[in-house]
Image 1 (cartoon, rainbow, N blue to C red):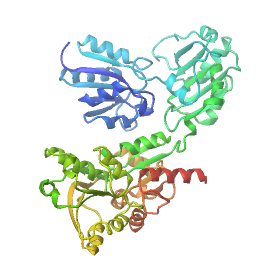
Image 2: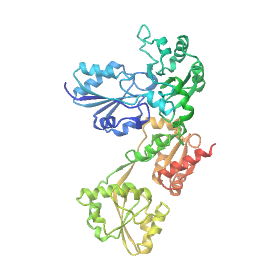
Image 3: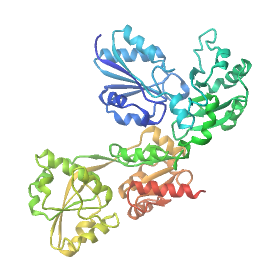
Image 4: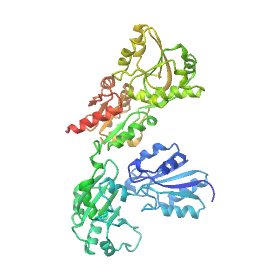
Length: 509
């Protein structure tokens, strides 16, 4: 063996939460990721390495060059010989209709070290998300996994439909949508009852999953009427009837919606996960980037004089993290704050303190700067406050607390920078009206969102795309920028945005 190493990793069938822990570990340590078109791009949030998309069918890779399998094999080998750790990220499981074994053979013949990291395959995941258990002690004690799309270069089919028709269990066909009529007619001609329960699942485990249930005979017509598209899974057997009782995924409150997340990309993990938990597809639309300050000297100077302050004020979770991390880097810890009272603008900021075993002394009833200033006035009269915040923002605290002779020293512990453009895929979803909601979580984000809109995307506002604001202050900034807000959160954090969207969705058209 020579050079680097290749990991053939199963990404699961669509839901990014279905990748294994080992798969995530491989992504984090990789120098190069080669991923298939069916892999959920949200998984790439776990990597900081070079990423290349590979495609073997033009349908899933518009505007991208279609690669032959031999070309993919050569790319894996060449990168490993350069000493790189390579992850070949494949939909589902690498060895279940995924051509992973062909790649493994090519690597072995080239003397490249490799490992297989199994993934959850569509037969179990998509069926489970559709409420279909492929085995059941009362219905099926066996399951057969079958390709519905054989190698087109083979002279004859390897499938024995007579044997499949007699199989005492559940039949699961992968990639069989285009051959569905042939599959159904072949099974019935071989003796399978035309009334056997059957289902087809399109885009399984994603927010756009669609399932049709029918008899075997009626399945092709049902699929055509429902307009199902690939990737798909066909399930045939008595277990399909369990869907009537245990379907669950398609009942999530925001199922099928695309929601734009406008926070900085490296700060949006919790919002991404919340969207997924509610059944929505998050679309990354960052309008700002977060970085450490260009100059730490003012922060370091303030930290060296913490004894002079009575209050420490945070107006964002970012402020908490950057300030506390800097304290640690300077060789200090939370003991330096023992004499200070701590105020936060809201519960999310207060929650960020808990990671450092600190509790906020003051959280205002309304999560905005005006409410924080009003709550501080009777407690901080004539006192000195240190405000750890961003390089830009409203100066409400300084002006309001001056009325009670309180001194507020602001230090910049992190910087906001405007994003120059969105990625091509996210922008296209906006321009075609395929994003249902966009959450705006600060005045600056609202203004930047408007700035980044193309004419085509702006035309979709109020037509296909609705806007959700985190607070009255953000709504006002959005309206001043020419944006119409459709819903406003009652609780001024991202959970409040999601709740407002849920309430709107539940109210119906």
